[in-house]
Image (cartoon, rainbow, N blue to C red):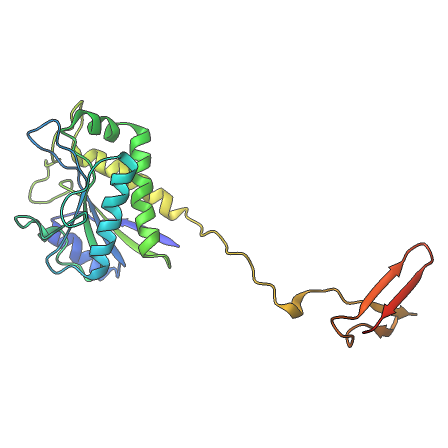
Length: 240
């Protein structure tokens, strides 16, 4: 139902390739960082040219991250349009499909960095990401993933911010995206309860003699009653 592709190269080129591949959604994953060890909120960046879908999707993601990890959300209800002073706008503005840039937690915050470094935290982050895609693109399709900072041709050594306790922003973002990819590519919609039409209910009674049907209740009224007396081997028909 979903096919996830990772895109590499400079950010504009990633978006151009995703457009060519006719992806239905584009996601770039980052983590935030600050000079303060106490700062910690969730926000999603969308482009200045963002569609209504991108904005609604970004708000959904940020607010679900806020609920999942009990942290506040920033921006306009969870989104920063055009990024912060334009930073982040170029990461998503070249797409032909809805696009968001994720900033779910602060890796400079020791408590939030611990979540990012833990397998449980990564699983929870991946679940929210995959859930957002299922919510806004329920029919499935090709999804574009971009790991923030990593795999740029202009700065191949870039890995983003250092994570409190060890590791880098980009490497953990990639782990989360790989987990989300697995969730999406193994996703199977819950089948809805089948609707049984009235004429599909098989409660017909037929009388067969020597292999030939000699009577059935097909022409009876719904209020007529048919009762089989097993002890006396008798079929009673009561019409109303």
